[in-house]
Amino acid sequence: MKTRVSAEDVLRVEIDEVIDADSTKDPESKSFRHQLANQTVKNWSQWATVAGFIPVPYVDATVIAALQTKMAYEICEIYDVPFEKEAVKAIIGSLAGGGITTVVGGQLGGQLVKGIPYIGQALSAITQPAAAYAYTYAMGTIFVKHFETNGNLLNLEAAKFKDLYKEQVAKAKNFFSKRRNTKAAEQEPEAQQA
Image (tube, rainbow, N blue to C red; front, side, top):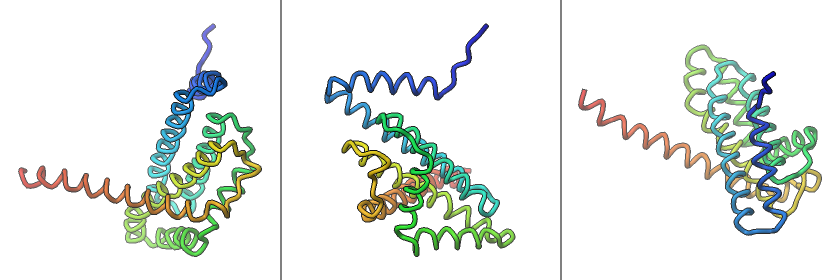
């Protein structure tokens, strides 16, 4: 009888190896843990970008929130922090609510615009993926920074990270727009040759 191995099983084995190596407080293993956590944040931010393209109002926001929760779960696994779904939901809500007028207002506005036939979906397709990437990246970065200082889900105070959250959102949006502009510039010469 074959035993099925999931991606989570493989990740858990890799994380356990890192944790075992980290028990000696080897700086190299801490660096690996940090790199693994940062790569996890980038991966889930990219998935959030994809979810930002969902054309159905409010469904995309629900999927993005689920992806952020899954990202937090994996970061907890990397840092050997007990995962508590309700605590993560509260933290995500607090972080997003920290800039309630910009973040939530922008998301609500984006959802309302998305409801406008054709035009709304086109406008949303331009802005929502970048916003999803930025918010997910910022949240992941905060979890990583907090866990690296031996924090846990119960002592993460979102108010302390408000400025860092805004800074990381701006950084991620800037990265996303630079990347989009670079891809557009790469495609221009191809269009001119055709």
